[in-house]
Structure formats: C-alpha cells, structure tokens
Image (cartoon, rainbow, N blue to C red; front, side, top):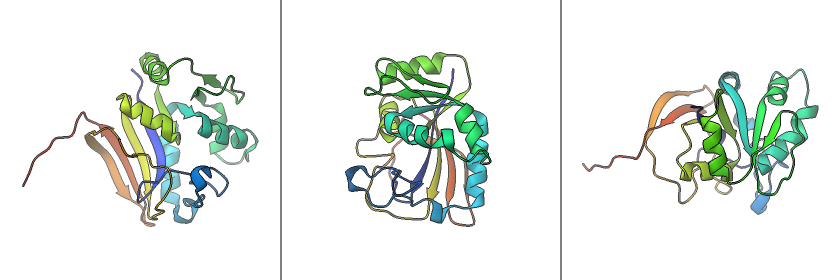
Length: 201
C-alpha cells in the first residue's frame, strides 16, 4: 500500500496560497504571493530536499500542475530540484484537462477519490501531494491522507487559501518529527491517527 503524503508550505495562520511568487496564484484577489522566500532558510531547504528524495511521485491538482509545468521544464538545470521535479512521475487530478504534456505525467481518470484509492493500492513508493489545496481537501474528506509534511513559516497573511479550511475533517495526528529552524520556521511531520479523542479538565 502506497502512502499519500501532503507536503506544503504554510503561513502561521495556515495560508498555503502562492508561496513562490507574486504571480503564482492571484485567485480571489490574493495580493500576498511570494510570502515564503523572505522567511526561508537553509534548514528548510535541506528538510524539503530530504523529503523529496524519499518520495516516488507527485499527485497534483490542475492549478498546481499548470504552475509547475510552466516552470520546471525550462528551469535552471543547475538547481538540484530541476532534474528531480522533471524526472519524477506526476499524477494529475483534473476535470478540465484533457491531456498533460509535462514529461512523466499521467492524467487520472474518473472520480479523484476513486483514482487515488487505486493509486494507493498499486505498487510503488510514497506519493506527495504538493500544493493542490482543493485536491488535498478532497483527499482529507475521503480519509486518503496518511501523513502531512509541513513547513510553517513565521508570517501571518490573514487571507488566502488554507490547507485546513472550514469543514476540515476532524483527525488525530501522531507527531513523527517536529523541529524549529533558526529563522523560526516549524518543520513538522505528522501521521494521521484516526479520530481525535475528547476529554475535559
């Protein structure tokens, strides 16, 4: 059974929209694109690079796929992420796309949750859901996420798409590893662990 791992950058208030640049995703009038880089540091880069070495493929929604496919094929080949991103298998969940051209990409057919269940049951290694907030929330609702790998950056944005939006499914999490960089970013790996428990003091 393959694991589905949500891997994303978040602000302290949970925003995941457009970390990489002002023009990345302005949907909803979002004006804070590019919030990640000023809070980034070498420890974050090293952690994320290590995560990507452990995964077999990526699972992307349409918008994230289009952002990546417009950037990585012509990205600096000296960037160690460039050959990794281009060479990795990509699975794309979209109702709008009819084809995917980026190398090693496969368009999933039918219902996204059903397609991901089949993907989980196939042979192979871990599958990373990168960005793709709408897809991630669909997977959460169907209890298909096995682990979260998050970098939580010391900045508050106040608006924008959130990973854990209203209506997120209550889920207990088991911390696998949590650390804080010198720059104040929390690097957390959390495994899903059924439903939360409740108690009182």
